[in-house]
Length: 340
Image (cartoon, rainbow, N blue to C red; front, side):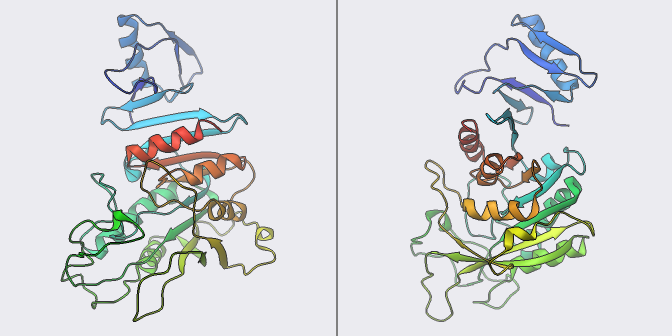
């Protein structure tokens, strides 16, 4: 378990504020009330290192490596947790068989630079990116309930091999950030080729023991067209449905009246002012949960971004946990969640 210190979330500058009346819950369910004097404050920090759970009441915890953790309840009594840090290391501390549904969309290969050290998506070798995603999914498999379902959204990337781009990307400024691996020589695939990233990841996950139940097509309605003249413009992405057991939750009624493996959903998500991320449309997150999450389930997004999956899960009556490496994204999603 990661060790955390307590900080009042409203304090943005300077050292952590004085800690008053924080309740630490031990494994034996006893409660310790800590006052604000210096001696007892030091005792509190020692207690935090030894306890399994901390009742936060709207507060934030800071780990020794400067990552953060937030937790709370919605007005409907649904529990939420947000971890800021590396998904692989944070999930390794979470208990087995916890989440009924995992809905996530990892950073695509060399599509955006989020300016965070250790980010996935900027590996110089295709195999390294595949390994990075598959390693995280190994932990996702462990924390997924035995009858749980994973929905994994991945987009593909082209290999240009023509050197650093000098043009302007009308879709996103985040997609122009110097020489990328997909622009440099020696990536290992022919130039101008679609790399096949989603299926490379999916097959690696199958090799590691995941059961691939469906390759759903997300028909991205109203998506901005690509500026290409020598191939069809792309209008869909993959949503892979994985499980880890022969028996799992699946609500087929949620797919009635439509093509069950082609989901036509607008590609225009809610705006995220103040941060530059690539959020899920609410309808897509909702569809995944309607199909693969039982009522009052526990939902996880290990690449939470702006927090769409968490927000939709909570408003749908589920508990929700999110992880993201970017501290700005975590702060954004916490602000949105706290008003639910």
